[in-house]
Length: 561
Image (cartoon, rainbow, N blue to C red; front, side, top):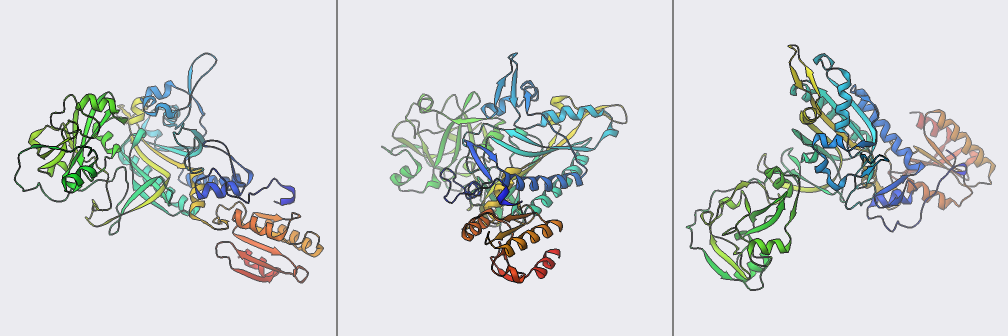
């Protein structure tokens, strides 16, 4: 591509409304342009990168035997009602009506339609296994779009679905996709971790995430320094160490704690440690109120809590609801005497004795509270793991890092096939539900993750596999005939070798051209300047900034290799 004949622009100043490195650099490099909150145009230079990402994904999917199709974006709402997921998506799903007042949605995901597609291939066990995939635009009405392409309302995803007759076949299909994902992310040049994850609205038997390691990642990756344990913070189990306290149970009594509501305030007032407290958090889960009991220095993991209760959503009880339930202002809730509320206790609390908690009375707490003083309806692991906890596999030290979810794999089992009536007949003519797997990759997130991991103070540093152009030729003097001739010769010869080549033949100052080349991050820059008449050019590697003067013959020979 010759810049003098192309649509091309860059921005010198940082983008004011971009809070991530990738969002800022992609906007400045003229690769994306925000049109509204969480919605972006992919500009020509960015589309070249996205095309290469798509090609890598498509090559690896096809290599597994998966077949590509394309699903509609506009979907009848009743499809999600039939599978039981419409309520789970809630307001995250864009809804609309057609001229006949029928309800439609913009597809946030396509499990249901892939199930419908699979039903077209007959119902015999001989028709399986197979895998279908698409590269398609999805829509989700995110509450808080941010970080450029990382959390948006419209995004491009590759989603694939495997179909098998039994769990053994599903395992084979799953591992095939799992290995393909590793090859894809390796080819994209992304540093990633594979972690256990929450099933979420997808449901099924297993979920694993591919997380790009990144400081601005919205997910927290929990990993062990001694073994290969790795998990998303949402589902990482807390391992309780130690036994039930052997101290003698004291007599429960009230303690006046004026103006002390928080754990820290009460701990300071009573001159004791937060670990001696049990906090009571009141939530509304579905249509009932639930009190969650946790050790004073442990936070509630809402994902674990929802899973334990087999519920879809939860929200903190309002101050008015707290006062109605506890007969006290917010900050003094406790399990003793709490009525009309389900009590869910964290596993750590079950080992405690003589703990301190709210008294359901304003400005009052209870001390020497024990399990005999109230009744818990459920006990389980509902706490957020911390770096002070131990690895659930080997008991050694844990460490935390942040990540961007770029891919996800699910063993769905028969969740959707049962709901959508996807069955097969076995050799004995018996009907069984099909076993499904689901495999997604966010292409825009991959693009952003690469930039987050590959950049410097001057701009993007694209890996060669997905750079918009592998080589950029900079013509220093637009008026020098020798330079112009050599630039065009190099441009043509390198293109014939199979390289994607960009020729900056604009009538601009050299400094402008160099800055643009560094900003858009091409792997190699060839500078054609004052030694052009001698057949000598300068080659600069973007990743290392190493520069070398060489003859055109040597340069071409190097690129041939």
